Image 1 (cartoon, one colour):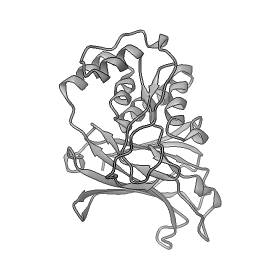
Image 2 (cartoon, rainbow, N blue to C red):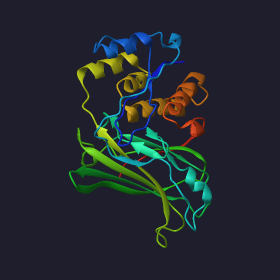
Image 3 (cartoon, rainbow, N blue to C red):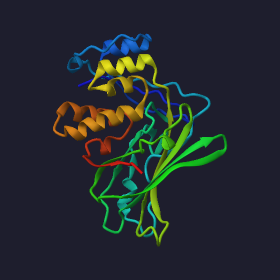
Length: 269
């Protein structure tokens, strides 16, 4: 089992958020020292995890809703379990990073009745006080309980720009969307960072376990996506399953850490 260290993310309120770094002791030390040497191949012999409390900044980053919250009149009560797989504090989500132009977003969706399988994903860009829609699409959900992923289209008009903050929403509507606006939702924030030569070199050295490098560099969305894609392809791999559990446990999502991955939305429109 690989080593996890704490992801350091800014938030608005004084609270402790345990995030994750995964990797070898030797590699983690090289990251801390700002070195660019490659990762050793002996990941299976990595030592046990360690964690530490991050220093919270005075000026916080935006926060969203990681858990769907209280129920509504005509909505199934179990929709309160709708969860975004992002760092956060309890029900709150916090800003996290990606280096991908079209990142993937991950959610836990509870079992849904036939009448409650209409979803929607929305992405907005924040420009000062202005908010502009970047992408919006309806989704048809399977109804099976488990983890779903949503990948933005690989088209330039939807690509995230470096250092811009983006706000996303994932809605599940309680009935026919033509007749009701009642819905449960989660939301959060993502910011794209530049892919440096050092990071690119480290990723190439870490293949196929790039999530070790992403996690050690505080790049949450890509760490989760790289690990999640491998878990989807190799659902019986004990090491990948344990690494996935450890990653979600580190951000307080123990209750859904062992849920199966049931659906992948690779949006191309």
